[in-house]
Image 1 (spheres, rainbow, N blue to C red):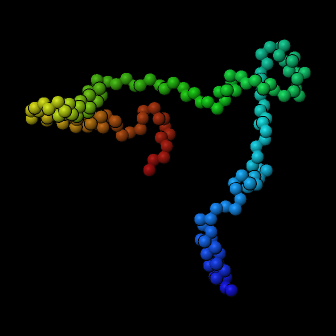
Image 2: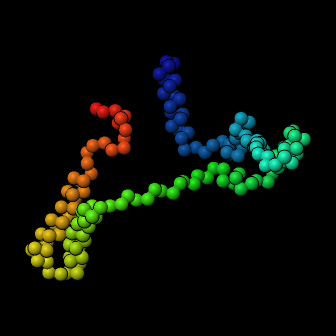
Image 3: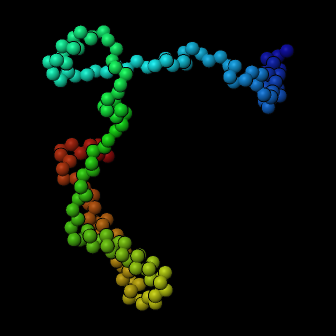
Length: 158
């Protein structure tokens, strides 16, 4: 037999046994000992003495295991509490008007269309112009330079 024919025979056996059930149940499969977890993970609790009396007690109990009871600090060990967010920046009048125009124009058109109001040409033009003007005003006010507080090192410039 050639190596090619041996490989073909192996593939035929794999394809023929594809839908067969396993000979052994998964519960009978051996579990490697390296995958077993210890019965109870050892935890080391470090407690800071608060008074001289606590220091004296700790000196005699150096080899003793820590108590099983968990403190409030142990319960929150993996929990992250983010700091409160900073306050929103104060907006000047021009920015407020630009946001109002950006959302006010389409809102008027939507409400007028849903309420079946008759829209005059000047009202339609004003709503569309307000949307476009608000968008342009916000984009122009964004600025394209680095922030004023970035310092001398503004990172990589390409």
